[in-house]
Amino acid sequence: FVLERADLVAAVNQDNLDFALANGAKPKTSTLFRYGNMINKRHFIEPSERSDGSGLLRELGVEPHRFLLYTGRLESVKHPDDIVRVFAKVRTFGHDIKLIMAGDGSLREKLSEQARELGVENHTIFCGSKDQEWLVSVIPLAAVVLSPHTGLALLEVALGERPIVAYDIDWQSELIESGVTGEIVPHQAWEEMADRVGRFLADSNYARSMGEAVRKRALKMMNPSMLNQHEREPYLSLFDR
Image 1 (tube, rainbow, N blue to C red):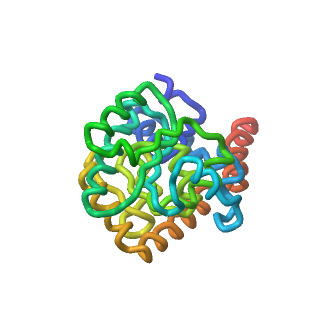
Image 2 (image 1 turned 90 degrees about the vertical axis):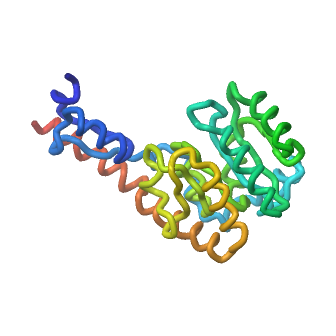
């Protein structure tokens, strides 16, 4: 009822917009308001020019470029349990690496137990929710970032110039394209996700090139000034009418 009658329908990504169009929104009055202008501006700083997060990692007993990173809520809708499974499998490939789970939620204790059952409890760090300065400094030091289902967090890690392995859900395929800007696998195909992580860890040149490529795409797609101007135009058009 609402979508068919709206004078303006704005979605934060193409996946959401496609849903609106399929349910009555008019193409001529529908648009994208991507959320690149909603994240902390420090994420747009070149990774090489950011504060060094090595000290923050030492507090956790982690070395730079020797850890996988997940940043997001520890809730079932985000599938953080898959990340623990992925990590356990990656360890079987012979990579001496740790996992940082940056975020909090109702699954934290369950995930800790899962890590114990899979034998990776001593290599998994649940560091809780972290502020933007911590994220800006630490993200560029991750070996690989895992994104089962993230929103703003996916943009933040992309701007951190990190190789990303993501599930093909929601908007993630708009940013991550296998062999072009990272690696994307079917939703909840965690074993395939582990294999792609292994590829990044085994080929540092490939990992670096995907990190550089995803930052370039993110900058082009999420330029705040461009997005601000694009958001003004539909509203001004409404006022004119």
